[in-house]
Length: 211
Image (cartoon, rainbow, N blue to C red):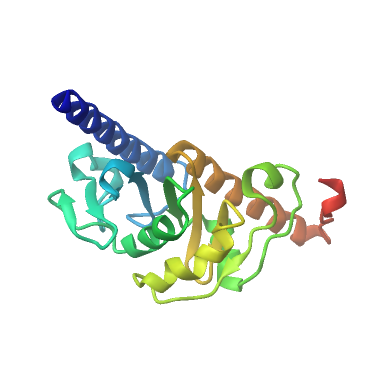
């Protein structure tokens, strides 16, 4: 019985690692990241750990065995590469928000431009309500690679499915990796449309009574 359980856990872990790689490649292809920027992880409940993309590694050649499994304190449990330099961002989210099972951090250009401006994106599309839980707020700046990046985002992510990180990028969360990635797509879509609307006039914000 134990051997069968161990085998199921191993298969599940490998499946999630494969999903991390596929999502990372998709993010690069769809312009959500550039070069080796951004990072993606899934929470491994059985191990109280995460599977995360490696640091500074080319997405185009990334394979399942390149994904790093680390505990939430940063101890490497599996992998031959260094974990993402932003692993503390992911760890803080998993530690403080038990409902989150996956984290996607992108540098999508339109959304990141608002992060650089420290400018919240209001609800200008109704899709922002079910997917993002409202406006896209900005978390305070923290030194990249520090746990403060995550702890600054946690208060917002406790209420929303994504936020902008000041002078940094986007972090989106979800019950699954697919959900977290779709949420990051909606952030970029809203940012692009808001940017375009601002260039031609004053965007009309949807108030809560219209949700």
